[in-house]
Image (cartoon, rainbow, N blue to C red):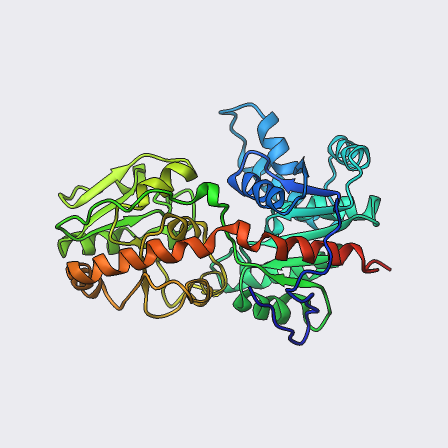
Length: 393
């Protein structure tokens, strides 16, 4: 793991700098997510205990009544309220009181927030009430919009929110360059380039299944694209692959009820189940439906969970030969990669069974270097450095 220094972002070097015995760490986000469990496991391997703090959005979601619908007016007001809270802090006084109490009672000195603007409202509120607490935002995905004007709005908001953070964890050099240009805009902030590594607990610990005699492919992306974004609708590409003889396995969803002999739907799985399931395939497909009207910032800058899980599974990665810059950076030392220019090209490569077998062996071997425990000390050192630095004025 290396880190470089570039204009606009002060980076703490990747060598150990004397990690404190106790960093007073807390995780801010959804405590039921795999991101939380993964962070706790990695910090434990670095000798750190972590207190969990639930963010206001997941707290509100867990306390709301299931199945309750809201009017379009109420939905619009909710959106306005959320935007306001991201600028001025969450307005939920009961939540703020509980959050500050937990921070004080557990002697929290460093908060690592997951992820992106999802937790910004809570960061703003906590920073104003406890300015001595170091707050680090793990920017797993930014921006999330796929329309240029919405991307510009998200960058505008983030520029005004980032002053409430003491540091940023960024998933790639590509993201660092983007954040420097569109968010920091010449300001200096401690940043750590730390790709999203999964704990060895989530990695596949079994030998890959025997190579099948027919080309097959796994797609771990969303198929419920009506609930998500238009770029998640890759049904056309999957059907093209099926027409070229590739057996494609994908998440079951109402929007994507594909009637094809080479299409195979599976139900939602936990991360552990998905990793074990993925290891049997020729490759895991990483792709989105982008066109001339799509703002591609998100797809150039982000390393998606589906890629991280696939690498943890030790399965080859099928990725378009153009774009996806941060994904390519993540895969730099991963030999199990299949780049393709079209469905026909991918199908042709997957039908070369000897090459697929070799790539599967490479992927299984190289996956081990992506276990997060090997990189946890770098993250802990970065957090320790923030505690020893006067940041807030």
